[in-house]
Image (tube, rainbow, N blue to C red; front, side, top):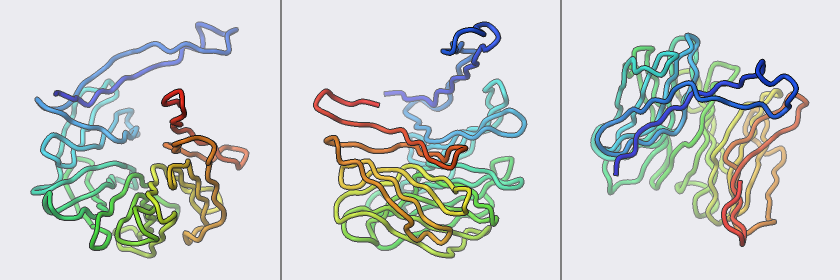
Length: 262
């Protein structure tokens, strides 16, 4: 099956419907990227020149990057990895370089580690670091922090209370670990979203033992508060953001008796 990276650009036409609060959106263009088999995008970053950078993995399980101009035309592509499994799930920019997070395993029979890759504006690898223990670990989201370092969130089977727990790693500007934290239950837990907050702490969203879960920490990753939604059979948060009034908004998936809902 061919699964291409698919980019859709939309525009909101405010000037065409000034009296209607439900603004329409028109597609300007679409683009596809990839090879003859599947390619799986995970994150996209808007660049200062109006272009885009897309991070994911390709059909030979390498980390895969596509850099485009403002119209989605391919400028360059790069792959990162080698033998085994590599996937990129998050992307951010700091100064003139780009930083990519994900997971990496030396072969298909070995555990994966959390993975951080620094690349240049031309897609050349500058350095990479791995994080984790003897079992499977990986990152699903990342962000540049106000002190010039990086915060990486994902899952760990090496540390924590039992099954996969949330895994938070703080690094300096060179990717060296400053501290790590785990959160969760003895059951399966997964973190999918991360943002640095205005107080220097972090807000994260995901799931904990089949329930949607939000964690708020201070700047050192120590738990400030958490909240778990046990109202439905199976729920998770896929994105969480701080709002201008200091609150938070989260979006996710709920599996109830009627099926999957947003």
